[in-house]
Image (cartoon, rainbow, N blue to C red):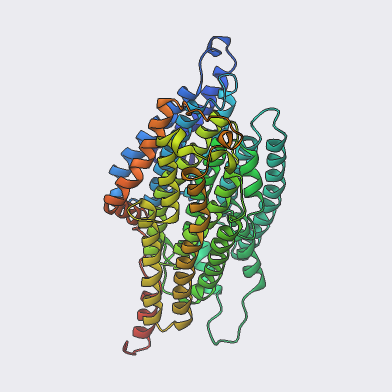
Length: 553
């Protein structure tokens, strides 16, 4: 009997491990970097190059998986259902590994970390990426928690990585305190949900979730355990997303951390948190084919999830844009911009449609390019002028035209001005909101339809509001005099290395190219969520009407 179980385990591992290969490469890379740290022979080598090679190797495997399985909507539970391998998993692997490679390249250009600390820094970077990849593929409530913690713990250390910088140490401590509180709340919510349904397997939880949802007009209130469990789970995810009111850590951590680390946290943690939120929403919203069944109450779930997500998205986007007005430190300004963009992306998930989820994946690609470019520009300018305060950016157009133009492209793309990719990303989100409004109106859910249209208006108004602080930065860069000139000293040009200018220029050019050719990337985003049902609520309505012997009007 035991021999049979061992054989079954070996067979299962033989099928699962190849699907988990990119994460295994990261694990092996972390061990390799730690071992190399022990030998003096490697002290003369900057281990960032080794970390870059490891990341590109994992990325190559993920690319091969995308073309082999992602294009065919492969779906397989891994490790007894703890993780899931599907097109969404592969898409997020590609996103995270590409972004990590770009961040490692940025750190090599800026010199942070130095050669001595390169092994420690890159171990933390790869460890955080590994945790985020697990977040994106979690298929069990326990793995949701483990993934969040694996991503969070290295991030705490990265935030305070700069030695002797008091502000960085304070930022790291705040991050740990807030993160520990959010993790405890999320774990309590997970225990409530697992105890309620007797399992942590997400499709099974979703099936029980739908069954337990109160029927509209039935007079039965929602189970408080179900409500609290869902709320506490969302608290943990929204903390990683820096959604209001769980954003407290973001501005202080970004200001205290190095610009390279802040850029990594601003994109990677948002991408992983959005992937996790998308999977939870798609599964709980009845869109996962693995959680389907004959008992449909998907619209009951939508009546709860849509208003909650819409409210969080609206408050997050509005607060982020308004709070960015008075910021004079570029990293704090970009931190509040990050919060606002998290709100925009949550708007796509609030639709509870496959189109909305696909638009979020496209937005993530564009956001990676423009936000990383903005933080990279801040890092390059910091190395030249020694400050990250906006007052030091005066006359940048005259002192380094290439860097100034690149920074302008990144900020205008974040604003959403055509012909830049940021416009395409916001168009996708707003289009999904409009289509969802029409869908819910046709389904007889006027309240949800109005919610979608209101969210669309709020998104448009926030885009207009955000123009103030983005254009403020451009005004300082292009029109203000350099600080030296104000003091009567002749300003000198900034001697930015050619490799740094090429890095910023390539990211800026890619933003224009993505706008021109946004179709293939939009299709890739749609492919990432293709296995999920497009409109489960519509299917539920048709099924219930047909079952009652009625005829749809």
